[in-house]
Image 1: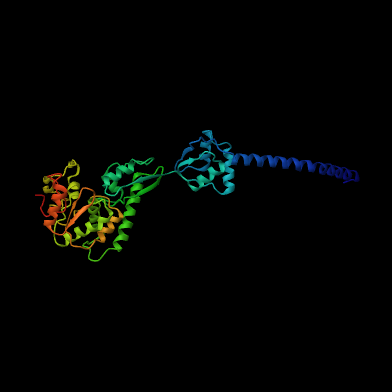
Image 2: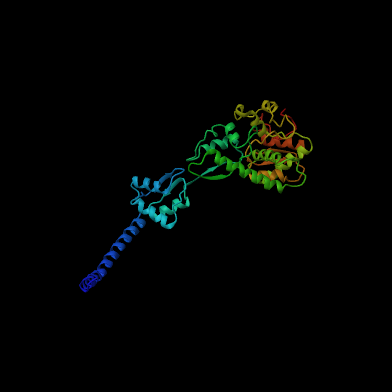
Length: 359
């Protein structure tokens, strides 16, 4: 290379250095503008109305498709920019379900909510004393619940829950259950069944001495009778004591709710003496011992009472009309209580249990 060429190259280099500060300045401006635009895109509130925005992420969906859907609905601008932010944050995971996006939320809130799976939750309450059929109907009526084919009837629901050839009665724990949008009826009922299994096992381990049950299932049956006989928590263990003493003495339980359950759809709300004599597998005025299955959903307190009956000598009880009962140790005392609390109001009423066989 000649001296002339060297001088020319040096001169060119000096010219480039002269423009470098300006180039750096322009680059900084461009970078700053880009960062400002990105920041604005991420923090400015999304186009959400006062009542918030409900939207659904289908099972198998991904963040990119969810952001694209929101762009098409006019909620979100620059979905690719938001997706890049999610990758930068490591928050590209997404959960299926229904979301509620409050007014004032921005793109960063949205990404975080989707990544956490902060889906809308719903509640369904199953009540003590209901039957399996009633619990199934309540669950299927739940908001945004998926009514599956398996849950279309009590028989098919029982099979789906693993009760092949067995009764599901009593095995659903009454409580409030929280579920996500899109949950099926069987999923919710399975939660309730598993809960009952856990509760029954724990209570069985804490059972009192000399209870007359050969298995937890027999205790579950007894708990369902107690649940149907009283709405007074303070009386549960006392009623359990009456039933246990009657079993120990070979006396029939003679409890009206078993008669009503055995009648099924034939029961019209009026329990008669003829019903007490009618033979069904559940009529404890006719059969000895416990009925073959539970007759309702017992709560924890009823299960605990069945396994921890109150000691005493009472063998009878009769409803007093205010939700409570009068307990008696002798048949004579019981008959006086029946006349006082029941027969004056309705001649064909038969309180349970008694030793009069419905006569």
